[in-house]
Image 1 (cartoon, helix red, strand yellow):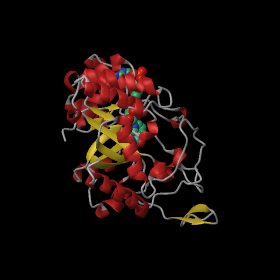
Image 2 (cartoon, helix red, strand yellow):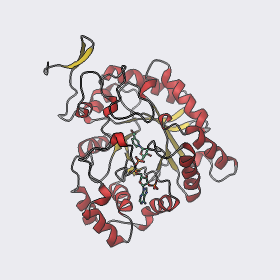
Image 3 (cartoon, rainbow, N blue to C red):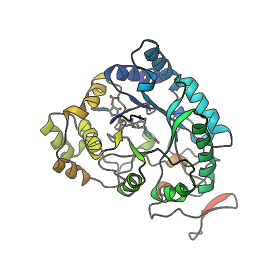
Image 4 (cartoon, helix red, strand yellow):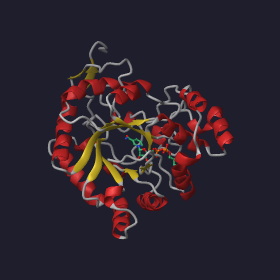
Length: 334
Ligand SMILES: NC(=O)c1ccc[n+]([C@@H]2O[C@H](COP(=O)([O-])OP(=O)(O)OC[C@H]3O[C@@H](n4cnc5c(N)ncnc54)[C@H](OP(=O)(O)O)[C@@H]3O)[C@@H](O)[C@H]2O)c1
């Protein structure tokens, strides 16, 4: 598969409606984007599908020249559900097949579109390798059936990758992870590079329009950092473009979303117009400070209110057991 150096995201952040995002995709295809990151949970695949079909019918782009990615949502991990979800995404996107299909999050649960940060699903569960592998078997089946060209993971950690990789008959082709100058996930990044898993960086600009539920007071805005602004002024571009140039310079694929035509154009042009020096890349490398923006609070299970519990920060997967109707972390009994 020819995997472009930059793609476009399609999450409307609960702020841009379906048609606004679809219009952005329509404009982006004409501008020359050849990679689109979709997901059933974004609620706009039907509208994006209309745009894609129109582009194929009118010969603006050929199906085989475009990479279309989608993801199975957390409430479709059950037996048989992954195929149902994939088939629906293919129907909605009107692409005949998907190029890459991701497990969106490695936790089963449900939360409603637009819910606030305190929302919790009764069905939420911690990560268990066996649960994940049951989902992965269904993903492998989709590839065997030719519904998808490649299967992939998202929102994983090194510990989770190590726990499941030895048992994957088909290795993940790609990983989608939060990746921007102040959040570089260096250990996971290096691990995936060594494993030859393609890295797709989400929220590459620090998601300035992300939903309220994903904002906390400590969050740092990458595009406001003086070092990024200074590099931007040197190159005569917007700080957002510096974030993209850094990603391309590092060799992973950023998938910025933009609704404004000017931003869509500028982001695509970064590959040719904003080439950072090795010193500039190193200066941005040094900005990494663990500034996770998509913390995943809504995926927490009964028994914890700490989003750090989702991310295996000590390098291990905690041992959670369900006791007396609540999840308890072993060794930390309350
Ligand atoms: N796998 C996952 O769990 C996961 C999680 C989050 C996101 N994602 C994917 O990653 C994609 C990108 O993340 P994101 O949309 O949250 O954040 P982002 O791409 O970091 O930021 C998007 C915002 O930046 C603004 N922007 C874009 N280009 C700009 C430019 N050149 N100058 C100034 N501002 C610019 C846009 O504003 P305008 O709209 O005004 O143009 C847009 O609202 C999503 O759309 C989604 O596909 C995946």
